[in-house]
Image (cartoon, rainbow, N blue to C red):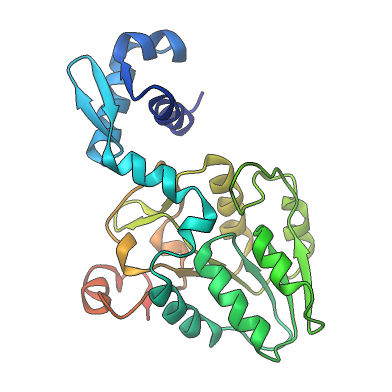
Length: 254
């Protein structure tokens, strides 16, 4: 089991039973106590659990993460910021292009603007709601990237549909993330979706990140893109000057 998978399993166990012990995790995950302690310290440092003597308990941040996994709740958060970001992103789309929109709620706001425009595009997405929204627009060819669908998620997960990305001449990937930091780049909590996003970033010649100001200098379980893999980072105006101060040497910021 990889490190990221092990840490996600720890968080999953915390959601089920509210507390875990080093000894119990050692048996369940079949690794050493030192490895478990290292994992717990890492998760504690990133505010994903609260370290205790001999183990850990669920943190307030973990409660927020559970809520944020529900797409219908998440897409209502910071809606003004997401709309502002989407308007900036629309300027980077040209008629006739082939673009990728991930399953994020911010990319869904961009999809709404595309739907209201007269742009003729080919759009690949792993977002179920995004595909449903755009499929009735005769100016658009919409391709849903295949994979696994589960729970309250809006995303098609996994890399079963990755071959379609390789067969088309993609112009630009638009993506968001649960968190961004200057050291870790873009990170998210769903390992299966992260794996698909990694492949998207590798395949797309241009990647534009749509990140609202509430997500900066935070970290989640797994990184899918470093800052130097981005061409443009679009955020809202709330922290724009501060963001430029820390990030503009790595990526163009709007």
